[in-house]
Length: 442
Picture 1 (cartoon, rainbow, N blue to C red):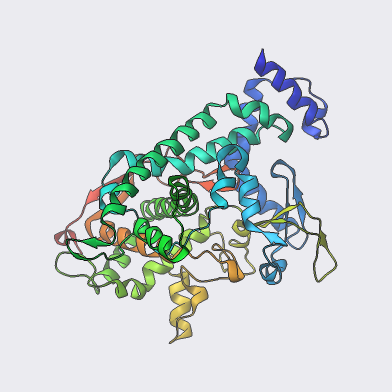
Picture 2 (picture 1 turned 120 degrees about the horizontal axis):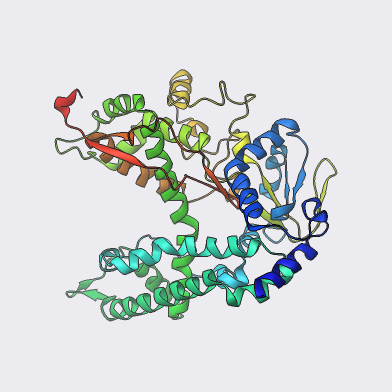
């Protein structure tokens, strides 16, 4: 009965939508078919709109957002945060009132290190909590996004996804509290020697000295959860896409393996971290994978806190959310030759042609105006170097030890899935790792 009432309210609240005007009730089967179509065909829908009129903004109703053409990326990043805010946008699209993201985003702490130390790093429960947190937030957002905002306060307390997220956050806070108590006892000296800062917890403890205040367990948890929300999905999904593209294109593996052999020791480990920057072909492969399989269909998600008048006279009203369709930009034939084809050597070839120099826009971490996967201007993602390092280290190990392929009978990648802003690898994908040794033809 409760669900029937909600369904009726949803139909009433969305009466302005053409889909609902002629319907008094939508069967569960029809609803499922509609959602499946949007999830599987969503990226193609946005690319078609971009091809139709790439220079005009349009309103994307289901996400309540204005999609701006790429030309505005030259001026929007220069606007101050009290005018165009990424933090407010993140809070709104993750339903911060119900997920706790609003509290997390208000946390003020000095963070300049990473990871959590060996004790937590080897704790299976902690690893599961960290891995599950971004998904738990996304599940709440996906659930609430199906209903108009005036129903959220009714639905959220009865939602399983909200209850699961609260359990995750509480258990994470308790685990961190115990770890912080142990660290505070030994932070100043270890074995009679001055303590050396090695991870994020140490960094936060050091910040207590400079700020002259003690962080609560809630503040520690907020910092960790913010980093997980911002970094874990990006890193993990990027690596999954790289592995799937290697399985989809096994002809790439031999060339990448030959490049790696120039920088590896006898035990197949990289001789030094500086070698990562010299892996031009691997870098090109990763950037091409990112171009063909972006993590989101749009980037530069912002909320206007004031009316914004742009240089051509267009006004963005206060309260509006905006973004730029980066996935469609990355396949624009005006910017990329054979834009719909995967070309592992695309960016490597351009770097070689340009000769000496770093050519940042052709690197995986570069600010590429044609495919700005990391954002634009001064707010470009600072964590992109972490994604690069982790991805190259992991891919190097895989390439030197395994051949990759799909399960028997499967020849190519399955269609990617649209979930809100995210474009995620199909969860039905299966990859086979075949042990490789040099005698097999390296």
